[in-house]
Image (cartoon, rainbow, N blue to C red; front, side, top):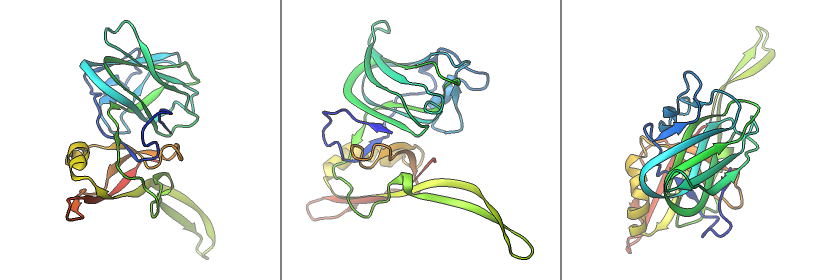
Length: 260
């Protein structure tokens, strides 16, 4: 699920959420279950989770040490939808007076990628309502969203539909079909961009490319029309830009994979 503000520029241009200021040392939780500490939120591994100690309302507070401009929150590998938990993100510069910046009530456990007006603040608080189970989150990003220069039109597989499955088929000695089991499933797609301004690429995207072999990112290909088709993804190989035209315009292609 991606939510973008109604007054956002280029609402259907692809979004990347790769800049992230949440670390294992700057996030604090109102409670933690044994074995599921808040420091896990500073690690992008989707199997390392923070879990609260109860189903009561909870808060996560991030202290960025200095006033920092933020315009998106990303949440992945969570149970907010299935546990009926709503969220609200607030900002503050004194950790006392808080202003709401984003809120929502997920209806499923797919990624949450929520863009809002650019806001400078030192402290950020994610409040989670009481639910039917203790809230758990593996990935929490706060940062600056990157809006790609060009839309994606044809020849693109939305990543939520790019299912790659491994199955095993059971057969009897006489060849009868006994059933199948799914061994694994991932999502895959390709981001292909052409006619990219070279200065924009160097200023806005090269930082992602430099670290894309290690760091995953949030991705939405056409957020306004298809807000459910967002994912927490990573590259499947080096992303290498190519000069496309004599005026310096560039192109690149990235194969990406995501959690189900």
